[in-house]
Image (cartoon, rainbow, N blue to C red; front, side, top):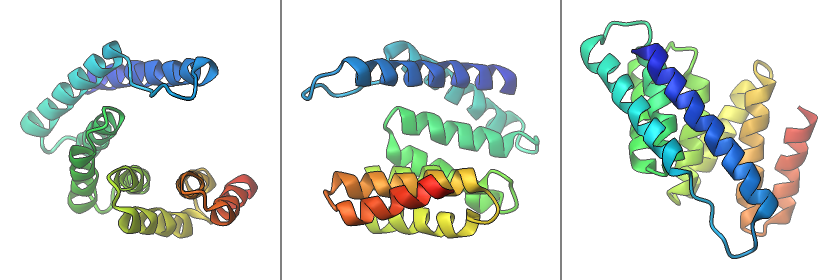
Amino acid sequence: TFYNAQRLFSDAEDEVFKSRRDFLEKSGPVRVFTIPATARQKFQSSIEKNSKILTFYPDSKWVDDALLMIGKAYFYMEDDVRAERKFSELTVQFPQSDLILESRLWLGKSLLRQKKIEAGLKQLDDLFAATLESDEDLAGLAANEMAQHYFGLNDYVLAEKYYSLAAVI
């Protein structure tokens, strides 16, 4: 079940990346990106399969993976309230999981998209500080998310600061 959920999720995520790349190459200033219907369907199927793991195999070693994957699928489908709930659930139920830091990145992104700016920036800034020495990739992603947020607000000074931090890591 987990294998199939993971395969569906990976296929859907690949579709989103390809579609977003094509969109950015061909889009005009007025268009808005939406994920392809086939990717949405695969994300939904992945959520259903992962939910079976949570329901029928609550002691499985894949439960924290399933929670993260469900949260990310909801994030891609722009259901940020459910995504936030799954990322928070992972943090509360599995505080020792090696997926906590990645979950915090996605939680920060989800909070920013929900306009919970202060909480989202705090989540990302705390993640940046926590991973600066241990996981440079994750620290760079957190800095990049903060830079994109500030760039969107036309706060170019802070955007430059965080883009610079992301670039040197």
